[in-house]
Image (tube, rainbow, N blue to C red; front, side):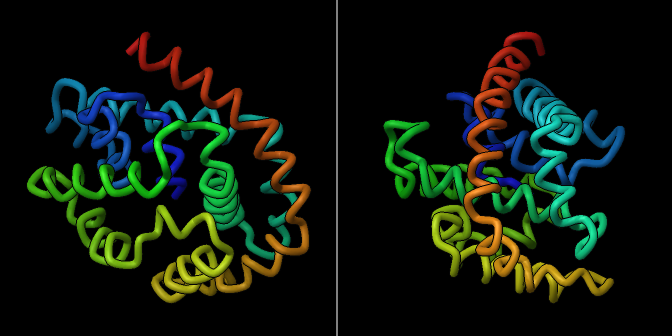
Length: 194
């Protein structure tokens, strides 16, 4: 769910970015339907998710939310961390966030023919509502979480996520700043090794 981070961590290769972005819609051996750097991007995404799920700082963030949100706590933390990335974008990139997100959207539109149906469906909301840019604002996070809560089959309570973000804003930001440099280094090394 941390779409902005996955796009950012893809480096400069467009195909890796596309693969990284669509990976949640590519299950199991369906990865074999892709080749080259698209496949590499999918593998990068899976490695990033594994690294993130097992990182002690990210676990601490999830634990703070677990009682209220159960297994959705990881989804919330991903989105919260994307908020901090968007909010502090100039610390991580010289390219303005609006320019970067516009390129990401165009790249995805140009590859719609290979994007899984579930991801294509999501893009129908993401692009017009400009999720990636609006992650920088609490209102944007709230809108995304409300939409996700409406689309989940179970009572996720994600529509209340911004309340918890506000309540623990400085703790989550501190944890993001501790975690993200580790993730950047891991991703750079993983791209080389894939």
